[in-house]
Every structure is written in structure tokens, then in C-alpha cells.
Image (tube, rainbow, N blue to C red; front, top):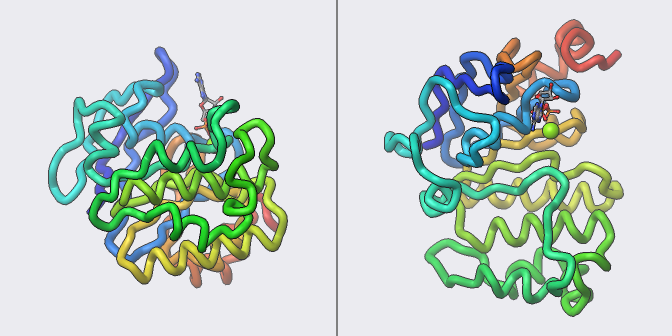
Length: 233
Ligand SMILES: Nc1ncnc2c1ncn2[C@@H]1O[C@H](COP(=O)(O)OP(=O)(O)O)[C@@H](O)[C@H]1O
Ligand SMILES: [Mg+2]
């Protein structure tokens, strides 16, 4: 489904990604791990065609069709969903208005009732504005919004960052449900345990390069890799 081949990218003259290759298949969760500043956000931004960083080489394709030169809304229209890090929302729009904006009733897209069913807290807060929401509520809304675009592949940049443990498990349950429904998910995580709880495969970045990839189960048993690239003892 989503295929990234030898992708290179740079901020100005500074190279940030160096020949990164990975793929995300249907019904698969791939976790992208690595310490802060290693290029994880830069990778998802490159795939989404956001312009910064600038892609300087390689190829990204969806079902074999090259995404080169497409703008981010055209990439989204290829059913690639994106949950950005830091949960950008509109301060003055309510929860419900954020969802209504995306209510396109497209095949496979989530509806507002389904979002409220998955995240009951959002239903309770539906008339609150973006700037009145807690970190966890903002994150749930960002995920709900991405699902309403009906993605087949979902790129999630640290979806559990700053969430209370109970909300982390809610997000994990949703990821598992989405996988069952055949979505492919690229999950950028700082939280190793959350990543290992749901991921099928893991890719580890160091300074913009893939330095390890393999089964999530293999990684949990590999103390040396955990320590070397993730600083976990
Ligand atoms: N807008 C930017 N302009 C210049 N450099 C950036 C920009 N955003 C990130 N970087 C640099 O690119 C590198 C990778 O950052 P990032 O992709 O955000 O890493 P991660 O998501 O893994 O923490 C870091 O060295 C960071 O300082
Ligand atoms: Mg990041």
C-alpha cells in the first residue's frame, strides 16, 4: 500500500532524512521509533507533501502510484490520513464544528456518531471550543478528524504524547480496531511500551536513517538495541 523508497529530505541545505525506505501494508501497524530530533516528524511531513522539509530524493507511492509533486490535500485525497504532532486545532471552533467540517460521508469514512461512540468524552465536550480542551481531548479530536477523512493509511505523530494512561489505552484499542478493519498505520511513538503493545513491526531512526527494523516481538527481547537507539535500560 504505502511505500517509501530511499527518501531524502532537507531543511534548506541541512539534510534531515537519508535514504529512508519503509512500507506499510494493509492491516499492519508499523511503529517508527527513535530519540528526539532523529527525523520522525520530518518523515511523516515529507510523506504528506507539506513542503518543509523539502524532498531531495527517492520516491513515495500509494498502491504503486507516485505521490511526487502532489500537494498535501491531493495526498489526503489518496486516502492517506495524518494526525499531526501537537494537535493543531482551531481555537474558536467547537468540537462538533471541527468534525462537521470533514463530514463528507465518503465510503469508509467515520461519521460523527462513530467518533462520539469511540471517544465518549468528545460527545460530552461537543460544544466546547478548541482552546478549552485538555491535551487528551485535543488528541482524541485530532484522531477523530483524521478518521472522518476515510483513510486507508494513517500516519500518526506521537498520538499518546501527554495523555493519561486511561486515554492511552483508549487510543491503543482504537488502533487495534482500525488494523482489524484493514487500515495500515504508521505510528510515530516516544512511548516504547505503547508502541510495542500494538505494533506488528518496528523501524528505528537515528539521525535521519533507518538503523534497525524488525518484528515488534524481536525488539522487546533485544536489550542492546533498546539501549543503543532508544536509551532504555
Ligand atoms: N522547521 C525546521 N527547520 C530546520 N530544522 C528542523 C525543522 N524541524 C526540525 N528540524 C530539525 O530536524 C531534525 C529532525 O527533527 P524532527 O523530524 O522533528 O525529529 P523527531 O520528530 O524525531 O523528534 C532535528 O535536528 C530538528 O532540529
Ligand atoms: Mg517529532
